[in-house]
Image (cartoon, rainbow, N blue to C red; front, side, top):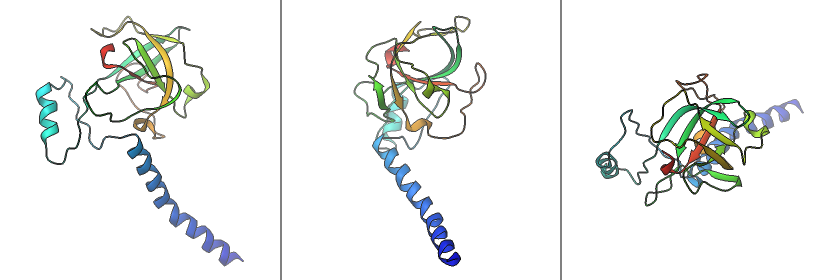
Length: 182
């Protein structure tokens, strides 16, 4: 009996990595997760985006904005936040967030919260207002963000806490908004 139990346990342990890889690959395919991310502190020009799209083996390019900042909630809480833009009109929809509740942002100043295993699942985010910390300067950024939905994102499936150079140093909120918010 103990040999049968051991053999069954071993078979299960050996099958798990393959099942996990297949499940993760399926999820990344469903959300069109990117394979490569090109980042520039100075930004990329249209010519840069075009050159990336013409590189050998590249199927799609979708420019996006990312910004780490401190956001203040309407309750007075401060959150170290990463703000992502959704894909622009006319570009492939890569890294598609999966809508859980509410709706996706439609205009500047609207955003969705990425839910994760952290404290964000215990809060009713829809309808709350977030404002960038007035002590930080972010030219061109909307001055107020209304949360209109919650999503899951393939960008944030790791159990590791993301780090940032602003605020507390650890990301507490991840948001998606339309490119016009930048």
